[in-house]
Amino acid sequence: MKFMYAQLPGIVIGFILLAACNTPKEVQHSPEQFIIGDALPDAPELAPRGEYKVGVRTLDFINRAQINILQSKAGNEPFYDRPLKVEVWYPAIIPNNKKELTTYEDFLGAPNDSTRPLMSFTFMGRALRDAAPDSKQSPFPLVIVSHGYPGSRVLLTYLTENLASKGYVVVAIDHTESTHHDKAGFQSTLLNRSKDILFVLNQMEVLGKPGNQNFLTGLVDAGNTALIGYSMGGYGVMNVAGAGYSKKLAGFFAGITNGSKSIDILTSANVDFKASIDHRIKAVIAFAPWGMQRGVWDDEGLKGLKLPTFFVAGSQDDVSGYEDGTRAIYQGAVNADRYMLTYVNARHNTAPNPPPPETLQPGPHAADYYHYAEPAWNEHRINNINQHFVTAFLGIYLKKKDFGKYLELGEKSNVKNWTGFRPRSSVGLELLHAAADR
Image (tube, rainbow, N blue to C red; front, top):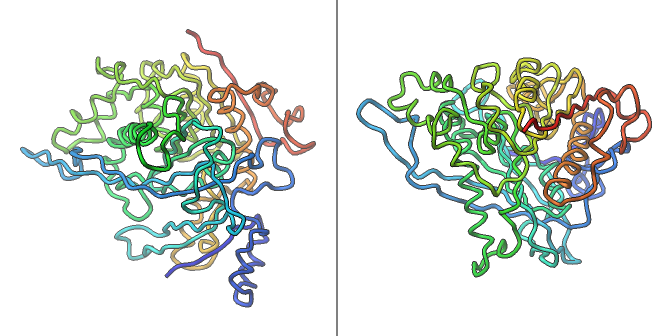
């Protein structure tokens, strides 16, 4: 079964769902309606979309001969060709007879769970499928997005579309065995997350080189890349950016033949890890990065993070932790020029799209509601605030824009209205900044 919807803010969703049975489909999805990522009336200054129209395409990559950690057995360490589906958003040319609209598909439920059967659903976005690229001002910086466990490449479309409209090529990964529809053993995510990100970076660089006959040729500058990760995606992007995992990570592979050996190359204790740091990456954004509470990060590993980093967290995060989670990571990354935005009283879901309307109805998929929702915050407002700060941060470090005034703020937004926010609207937020020690 499939459902189609255009996401609306707050309580308006309930009214639309009640009226949907009597509303023509083409009216439900009119571009004049509110769609995920649109700016609310109190959206901060940099949240609205930029000057470019947006195109979107789906690509399929295969990372060959990868360790199949979930099938590893005594005396046998099998390999497999690891498929990776990605979604690419980019500045585009929209013909006069076309609308900047597309349909995305994702899944609710869980694999092999009879109480929560898998169900696909669809939602609208503001991009044109397979549109011609707008290359007049190319090449554009590259942004790679890594979702949580489980998640999908379309979990943050409010942000990916927004960045493309501001002159970035954005690629979001479906991490195999870690998505909503193919979730498998956690060890696959632990081992493959950072490896997937680097592989996709390499693929995007190849596709962007002159002489390749594809839409990315000359469009993308992989040498000017930022990484965005949420939860397990944060775990992955921090590692790619230089933070080595601790030796305790090997404990998650207990009982798997050569498991600790497979993960060793990604730890700070491995002499080859520092040599693997990729200088094409210029900045990192980590939403609620996982692992600090579990001992995956330690002081030595966090010292390896030397790139400008923007952390985002909820002060009541009960998945990745706050004081002993994201905030502890922020404090330990002493060699990075770093920021931390805190949503006061928010839990873990400070990054994704709002909950699909299907999760608001009684039934098995209501259990998916808190995979997206924040009990103390409006998710559309979180989306707008994220758009604002991500635009400022990446504008500074990838585009050399003079956006410092949007980040050099008083720590608590309740004390004084923040630059870029409408009067009375910058409440419930905190922003920390620490310069690198090195």
